[in-house]
Image 1 (cartoon, each protein chain N blue to C red):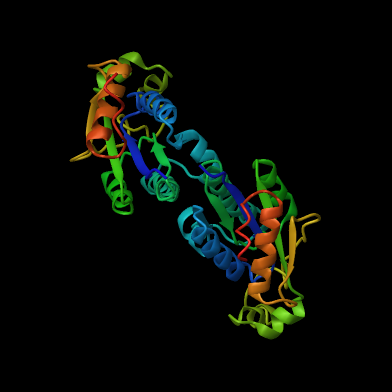
Image 2 (cartoon, chains in turn brown, blue; image 1 turned 135 degrees about the horizontal axis):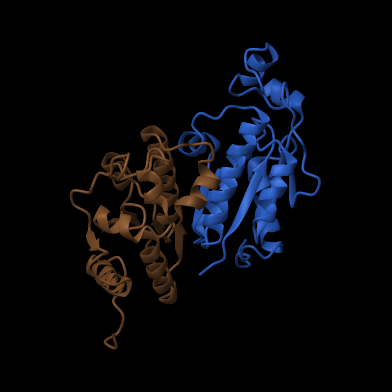
Length: 181
Length: 181
């Protein structure tokens, strides 16, 4: 049985966490791993209905995701979280609960995110129509020493994927693929 | 990789759900399965802090356990829930979300539970010191067609364990052990 671990993405809304999470999930499944992506919205529906976006509520939501990741990871699953998870302390608390934890900071300048604004959320947040919006009206605390930093404005998702897989291999969390790659 | 499923115990407080859940978990681990027991108290701490014992809050708590069981089961884990889960509708809702679901009703007459009263909870509940206590001041809805009924006042935990393992084997959820048994 392969060993599970938790792959924890953190970063601002729109930085590319979910894109990369889903890309790597697909590749890891293709390689025969069991993989579960804990999507922020799905988790809010299933585990955290009623919670808002205050620091306390966000921390509770993130702790619940962390708990479920821990259960999956210790049972051989690669648990992937792609929630913003803006607060350093609770991310580090979850890290401490894990045997194997790999944190990826998906970094992108706010200006770029506001320009792209794929979902139109930054525009609304800047106009004050969304309260507690991370990066605009709510803090985001960068990780001090994540296992990997992805600068999503400087490389394509495919390039990020390659770098991430290499890092996971180097960390001994997954096996390298044959010389064909 | 072995196939996961959810083993869902239901029954009154003190009926023997946790005892049997832990016995079967130990035996299944011994046989090489990945097993996770979702203990009611641990789940309340990690997923449902702040929820009370109204029908709505109980249903929310049970739905969360069901969601986590589903994630584990579809990743090859035998997920075991040992929460009271008094309401039929939400149990059946969780069943419908599963590919493989095995419900065990751990049945014990209320009189016997009140007499035993291992934790002293029934005495308190009958004196009105605990509100919303299942079987005393809150309803318990028996399952209509559980996969197995365990009458815990008529057999030892070891006998129940044997019956449960046989039923799981007959249902094709686990492999039978060699002729040595």
